Every structure is written in structure tokens, then in C-alpha cells.
Length: 302
Image (cartoon, one colour):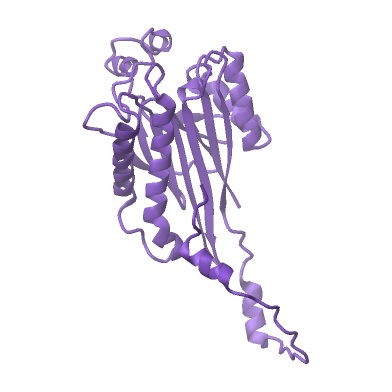
């Protein structure tokens, strides 16, 4: 079905344009000495940008993909300042539930649309502050995604891990057992999010060890997920972007079969983020690929 163009585009295409006529005998005047010397004193600053790489695989033991991901990077630059902005999302539809892929896609689209709509005035005028605190914005967006998933795929569920980057700060929203990692340039790192799984809770209570948790038969059972239950309590927090490092978001199809040390080493030894993502997916598949695999890697350049 053909869609109507937005009002602005209809107006734009209705206008006829013609080339500007050439201007002859233009006289230019050099800058005054004091102005040119002031310009020379200003350091040449390249605007900082967020770059990212994504990789995904259905895995070796699944016949369809229930993961969804979203990655967007913008930079609002000027003569002296720039404001890198990024939005990165991974959602893993709950395996064994009806419409898991519908749940993850609905959550991803709804949350991304909500946040970008709310940030639109700020994007158009970055000298203004966003209308609401970023953590409140994240909470409202996740609640909106919860309602959308409940309506679109009743009885299903999905994890959701979100990173909203504004300048050097990252606001995270997290439900389930997809993860966010900070990876440092010399091969160390840490998990930034907390798994909402029954096994992780038993480990936190000291009832099982980390080694026992890694092989526990119920390690994939979640006690908190989007679309499950009437009351949702997402983890929402703000942290600095990893200095000179890499932000990683991934589904459990990666981290459950690759050790953290191997994960960190793969990232820091890769030539670029896209290569790192592909290597991580390959490693997960080489380890059996028991689940869908989704990876987003983010860095600052400039």
C-alpha cells in the first residue's frame, strides 16, 4: 500500500528550483592581523564520535532468531564543541515462549521510538537540556515497552538491555540476563549489569558457587523480564563511558559460552569493532552455539 508523504515532503517536492546565477567581480578582504592571529591560536579539535560494530547469529541449535538489536550514533558538532549521542539496545525473546521474536522486536522498536521522540527537541537544539532527567526518561521508555509487549505478544517475554550515551555518560536500562560490559584497553573489564536469573540470585545469596552457577540446569530461568508480570522493576543507573575502552552489549548466547577473559581478549586484539563482533559470534558458535547470539560494541574516536 502506497503511503502518503509527510506534509513537509509534499511541500518540498512541489517547489521548483533553479540554479543560482554566477556572481562576478567579487572582492575579498583579508582578515585583520589581530583576527588572523586569534584564529591561529585556536587548537584544531576533531569532534568526538561514537563508532560501533554489530554482529548476530541464529546459533547452531536454534531454527529461528528471537534476538533483536538496535544501534544508532549521532554527533552534534560545532566549531569548538561536539556532543556524541548514541542509543544501543539488545533484547532476547524468551526461548520456549510463544512469540519470543515478536516480544523482542516490539520492545526494541517501542523503546527506541519513545526515547528518540523525547530527545528530538534536544537534538535540534543541543544548547537546551532534555525535558526530563535521563534516568526518568529511561524508566518511562521501558514501561512503555512493557505495555507494548504485553499487548503484542501476551504470554511471551524478553530481556532488554539499553545504553543511552550522551557525551561521556551512559544511562543504562536493564531487565533480564542480557549484559553490558566495560572493556578496558589492556584486556581487563567488568560486567556492568546484574542478571535477573534464579541461579544468579542463588549465587548472590551464597547458596551456590560461580562454577556451580555456570552449569546449573536452571541457569536460563529468569525472575524478571519484559512482558512478565504486572509490575516491572528495571535496573536503571548512570556510569561513565569506559575511558579509552569499549562498551559491549550482548545476549546470553555469547556470554554463557565464552569466558569473560576470552571475551575481553578478543575485543582488544581485534583490528576494529566489526571484526571483534564477528570473532565473538564465531567463538560462540564454535563452542556449540546453543542459543541466538547478538553483539553490539561501542567506542569513542577523536
